[in-house]
Image (cartoon, rainbow, N blue to C red; front, side, top):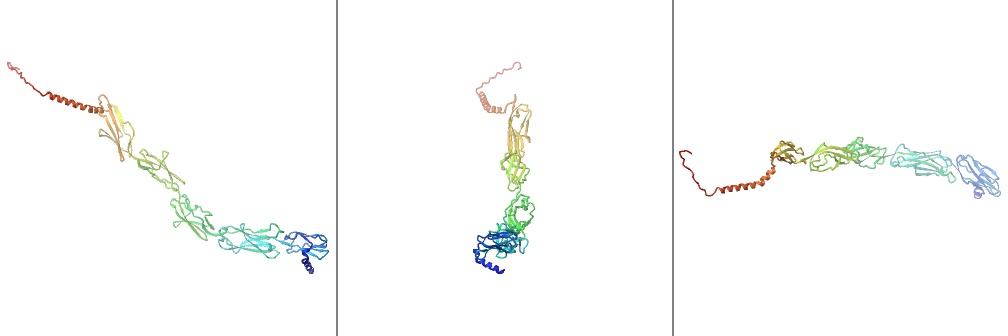
Length: 504
């Protein structure tokens, strides 16, 4: 039998290229345990043709087409061939290339001599195990990180029976690899005759955890509202990095600060934020300005001299700096103004910023010299009648008031002066005077008396002014006339007679 096989092999090697047989298909790829079917035909006369194979052999027949069939192929290294005995010439044969394959029972991935998180920058080894695959020379093992192909390995082994293969990959992860998924894939490239696409078996992904030292990406100044804690500083995964998540602490003026305590308006300043984990500590500095709504602290009353500049008496303590609005009788007025004597009254001050509004109500007392209000200034009254003169004056502080008539004081402390049962002597000019520390003001009232015996002072004045010169002239004329009459020649006669009988 051995000699027959050797002779057939020699014939095949000698005549194989010219053997009048055709195989369809010319090459087969079949899964282990699968079925296979190949036709062998010829177009020449022959004395017999058949199939030789360890499974599914076909006895020699005179037909021109015979088929090799195996319903469940379990031979790994099977080499079937079709042969023919031509009517002329020697026997020849054509071998059928057969590839029997088996996909892996499993593909798995693991770390080598390591468990737990990896440290950034250190080197680690991953291992991919492919179990029970054939043929190994058709195997390619690929490494992936997420969906990125990292590496691939092929094999030159000639084993046709299933084997186990181990492939390793060195990695040096960084912080960007935290949470990355590594996996490996076994792929059998069996050529055009094989299944398309090529069969693949993948491992479950290996998710790695990478520990890395803290890093503060940016350190920005912050303006929180009072009552906010440092724990509310806007830190996120992008501003502070670190794995495991760093612990955050704060320092101010070289002293530790309780980050959960609410900030007050007095806590503004330079702060240091510290991020720390088992690998390292990092820090940076920032200015924190604590903002707060306005708070007014006004007195209930203010005094200001009239026509002098009045400035806001109570500035609100607030950040950002508040805007101010001053109201009187519901109308907004200038913050700073020059008040008149009649601007005393109630005022409302409003301070506003982005965090709130504060209001305060107070009075402004305008200090000023006495001022007289318009009133009647001339009065005509009948003799023996009554009259009350009223002096309407205001001042701040309250002025002292008195009355004078014909250059003498007649009343003090009252804004009223009563003239009762008027006589001719009651006529004239009355003066009301008011004074305080800021000045003095006077107001006059003219009183005239009507009646039979009444002569107007003005009239008397006119008579005196007009007729006095005339009276003087008349007096001078009379005096001169009398003096002239008393001068001249005079005769004196005596008419004395003697008395008779002694009687007068």
